[in-house]
Image 1: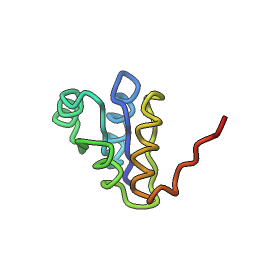
Image 2: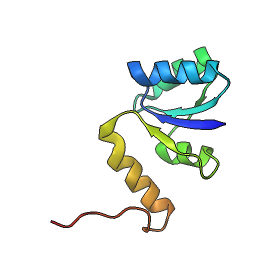
Image 3: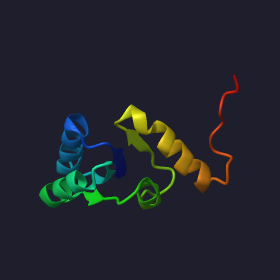
Image 4: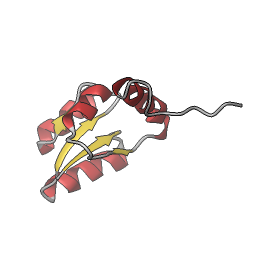
Length: 93
């Protein structure tokens, strides 16, 4: 199994460590690339350089666990580009 994580703060980093230790292949992205690289060096997880790289690293239909709520829109916009504008609907109002 391969899992993608967004956000490697206290909760996300611990999740990444435990998942990887449990034999799950983890790809992760964090807005602070230095933190991602540090954790990758310590744990062996795969560091994604961008949201696009994270999505591309996951085999379909695997999902991405959202760890930082403020990144939801960034991910949605990234996925919209990947699905030709058909993956995300915006509410009018």
